[in-house]
Image 1 (cartoon, each protein chain N blue to C red):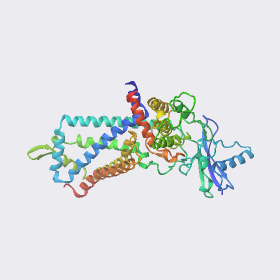
Image 2 (tube, rainbow over the protein chains, first blue to last red; image 1 turned 135 degrees about the vertical axis):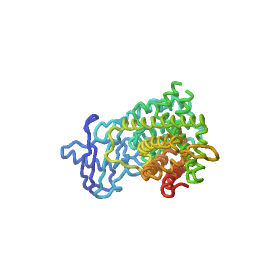
Image 3 (cartoon, rainbow over the protein chains, first blue to last red; image 1 turned 90 degrees about the vertical axis):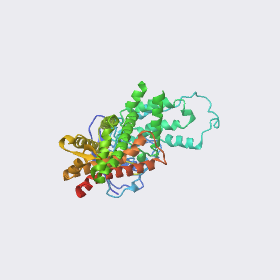
Image 4 (cartoon, rainbow over the protein chains, first blue to last red; image 1 turned 45 degrees about the vertical axis):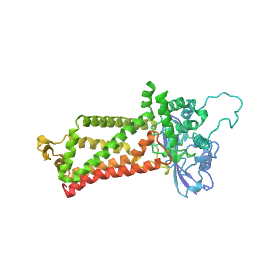
Length: 247
Length: 231
């Protein structure tokens, strides 16, 4: 099939960018969207033009590297998948596809569709860890954790830090990411000693990075490739309030 | 204390202020709407007696007005703050925008809170000026109910809504209010950290229903008066 692409091209962080039209021909329906872009890039290289820069790594939906806004929706039209898991069989011959980078002040564009997401690393560095002494792993049954709590923690820990929540949020808020990184510890005993400081520090760092406010649109939850619930955001708010009143 | 101040100014704290002040005003509009329905009954005496009773509360009424005014100001401050934060957080907007659909609760209402809010604010200024600070006893709007002389607010309302431009203006403002409140109610709970997979969908739907009922209650009064006159 043939597709009409409109792809964001930007030479560098402080350069103006624009949507450039491309035609992708002979697209196989079994290709992923990233593979389709690989083919477009091969043609560009053959013609002596600069290929379209985009991020990808594992291409199996677990690394969180791929980051494209496809027709206005982060990671494209399928729920619960990353960009790399979107295949061309979901499109028809002649379709137009607009591809843009994550748009957020805190995710500056490096080039074309590649953004710098180190602001997420700094939020995690602010408190997304537990301080433990290293040594032998403790006996697994020494610390009983209920199935419900373990599941809650695992649901939050599924976050791959791709940043789709920020990209999709009308306010470019990082609440879902920060909330997932806070609540993955909140229901586990290991997370309790630093629970208050963690909530305070990570929310403050999130604000400092220049992300927007959460207006409860819930768009983040809908685009999240790991389908993390906005219940984690509520949990983060409870932890933050409790910490602010007691610490 | 310092941490409480900085917490209030944080993104979490500001939204808590917004939700608490919003809930205060949400409670007020329910009371106001129910009170207004008295316009449609009792030939004016019922409504005038009610208005006179409220004025008679004196200090309590002033206290309530101050709480509402403070709520309004804080609500506006947080709203301006959020909109400015949003502009700063996304300086370059998307060429093509879309929604991922369910489970997203992004709606026309949730995306236009600032616009419906501004409309309601403009309405509020005109509304308070034309009724609370409108013509009263000195201008001849006097009536006697149960032997007590009082302001004939009922007559002012009936006269106002004989004019189609006022009816249309009020109708538009009440549609804006209904849209605003349809996102507001559940959002207030979420901002306070109150989410539950079982109860949040109920709160969401109850909020939309309440918004519809409140807006409808306010909406029918001017239209009823325009077409059917005083009760």
